[in-house]
Length: 370
Ligand code: V47
Image 1 (cartoon, rainbow, N blue to C red):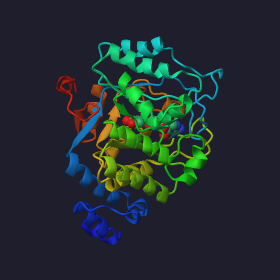
Image 2: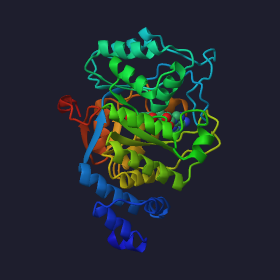
Image 3: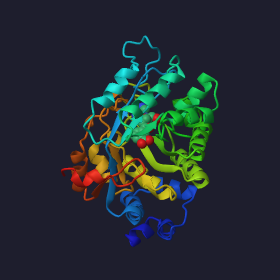
Image 4: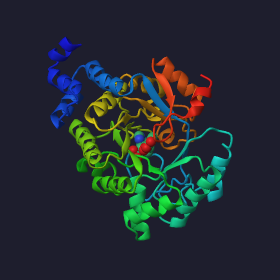
């Protein structure tokens, strides 16, 4: 491989990567444009194995999307309905939301991941009561809820600061933030695909405040639409800069654009090779972020398995009720059992490790049939 890397002109990047030296903006662009995907993947895999060996994380989680009513009009979104009266618009009552968790009484869930549309009319109490109610039903289950874009929206709607919103939600049970809403940070592309929601600075600022208040958060990147390689690298380096400042980013999650039923449907979905490359370059540039997640619903199950050799060490979880990707054309199952996930990790040649939200081993994994 060293001869091949030399022939590709990547020896300097390979040397830096193996010495643990930080890669530059130009290095990132070169990795995106290198014709040999496998060479890039090999480098990322070295890094992934140095950090985690063959270990591959997953968790037993539940996705809850309490409303799809959303005032934002992101071009890539197939989930949002703009007005409460739209035929497919829905907003769960608190009892309906609680039932989703109650119905899973016997399941060894460790996390509920809540993400919603930006609903213009719900009172702040709806979200506070949602958190309190979910906690009351399953006090042991971690609540990873509301993207930074939702937090900024709440602050503007309810006349509060971002920090006051976070503090109030934390007092009601919020424990970490998911990474949604990051899309692409670069202003040129963001203005086109997500013109009317929090900009990159606000998104990053909400994460910064969350970290200061003691929470961990994830960061995502939506790729495979109109963004350039330079804009991807910019996104990765802005994430890295935030992490230098706070250390609060747990996982980075590249999200493959799905073109069905949205206003960018003329674009093709990103190729498998693109997905593998984005995971690999993310692993190599984000030297200060412990985990790169291949979200199997976004990548497809088989490509997620391959991504475990291209820098990814995490597959997200059982998920159970995901809508955002399925409405945009994802053909993945709605749920994978713990046993399914463990099997597909083993089939990919890796070792499954059930984690909690903070990447601690969950004891029950030893007991899970595999
Ligand atoms: O922000 C919406 C994306 C995100 C489409 O933090 C689309 O652990 C592709 O952020 N094609 C929400 N993507 C999902 C998300 C997430 C997923 C898994 C784990 C975590 C985590 C976070 O979904 C949105 C947006 O970027 N999205 N529509 C679409 N058509």
